[in-house]
Length: 518
Image (cartoon, rainbow, N blue to C red; front, side, top):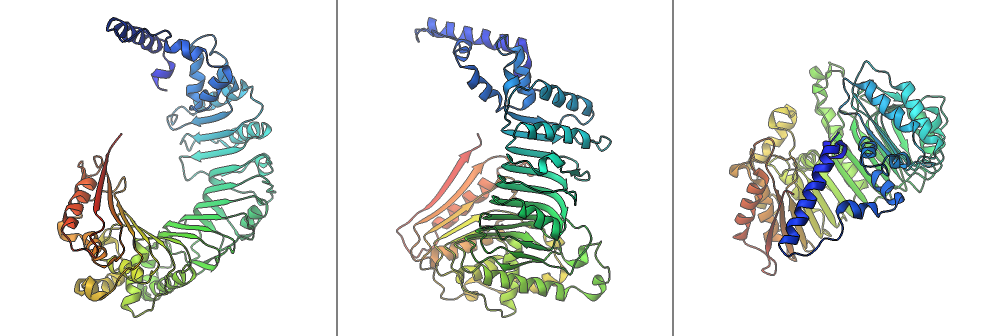
């Protein structure tokens, strides 16, 4: 715990420093300070102080009892609970004691949020503790529940009491197991997030049936089900992030039937899982930044695949991407990642015809390389209504981790020029281009000789007839990987190079923005 919140001496020193500061201001003629900070805080009503304490981690809220007699029991009335267990690896008993102590002295009649971040300790069984603590929250009509485990190998069964909690609005449960006999009745639930979850088709259907008001569903590190049918018109947002290989059902695709869905995200490493969009006819936005793994690199899968080759496997995914573009051709906003862009390039190399896209906003989450540049250009060519292009720099896998078969196709990129690839192409409606250097991306290894982002940017400047804004945004921060300001250095060089490039119109300027780390 931060000593600033718990130490009496720290509080005395702060008040002493404050008095010294005020005395200096008075001597300097700044004016008299009528009230100290303590006086002003003391004037606040108890209800407001409890509101403030409810925003703190619960351990810090409890520590406020040492401030004065008035603060001694204020924390008993807090309505938000956040028990952070990340620092209790070898002191699980202390964590359990803290939670038990706080709940024993709780006087609030209704809990807004109840969050448990469990310590990572494989020797401790939290099942009975979780059941007791969640039951306490359910009895006080909890609205938001979060359970996070730092040990992904340990699962926790949903307590029976929470399965019929009518007050529940949001549920975020990591390492979840659902009892087959459990009855789900979440009449008020609007947001459901489950991580590291294995449920079959029947269990998933039972969950959806028991959440008539559900608006957002997010499943991460998931497996088991192969049919996701959403019939409720209330559920508008679906996120599937990272497939969790469990039983090795390589051949079975995941079918998504969601005619009322408006926002779809499929993210992360899906390994071999094929997500088929059967009916997503109401989508407004789609974000496809997932990637797949070559079947020969999945050790658990049938080893005969290594001898039979992976050509058919990759062709199936190319056909799947073509189907995605058909099914998503009407969305207003489309976000794609590096893998999908590369597949589009391979489709074009094989002579496939891409559908016309009606999207007005295209977002690229990738670092533009020679492997995806022509896939991006192909998508741009087939987006005649495009008004906004945003590029959020993300770094894909290194060359060494790619499938050798895919590399043979991608090798053709060395003999292609962008202007020759798409001669006489104009973008009649593109008005805004924005390039954003994202936090956590190291761009040091992308040197001057491998600058495909510059090539794409130059191509846009020359062929966008109605361009109004071209903005490059970077944060000036030190990269943890190279210990340099690699993102801002790279993007500032890019901006300088683009200033001298030919443009289709002189009515706009190139803007470079850089914000310092706060």
